[in-house]
Length: 225
Image 1: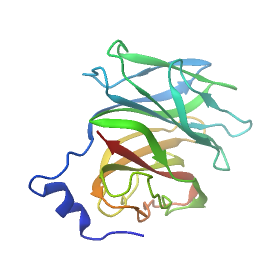
Image 2 (image 1 turned 45 degrees about the vertical axis):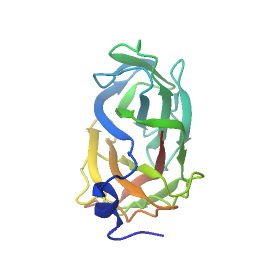
Image 3 (image 1 turned 30 degrees about the vertical axis):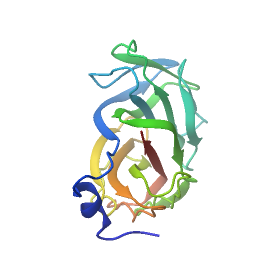
């Protein structure tokens, strides 16, 4: 279910419980070799939640990424067509991460689009919806009901897309937090959007693109401390 009008009230209420904060995003686009150095956001401190969101394309063969050392897989799936890998990995920072992380990928080096993000004020494992997979111009992130209920949750709506064009609209109540795209091979785009909301569940409205192509969407919930 969705909650129209909830976003502004919950984000600005006096004395409200603190939401996790998406502090920064970095991106990588280009050829994804067997091992690729992907930049991390600046300012990482111990206890920050780090996310790595990747989209890999390959017209002829299957390609998959794998979790970097010390990271955990949050989700991974293909999306049909040339969209071979739509994945997200996470870890809590120790403060010694440096400025990049090594991401491994199988298969012939081809185009990829990757986002990394830094979130403060988070705890526990992020929760994630099932995959929304379709060939469409309106990819729709599935509903998610996190186990912690109506806390001050940071919600992410993510789309992994075959083809490089940008969305013409993002889900209602969400703001664009970062995008990465490449025209290499069949092209790909990774889009990260965010919203702050206290609600037991959330069903984001669709993204909009000018043309249909293979896509994978996910809804992610991040718990406050």
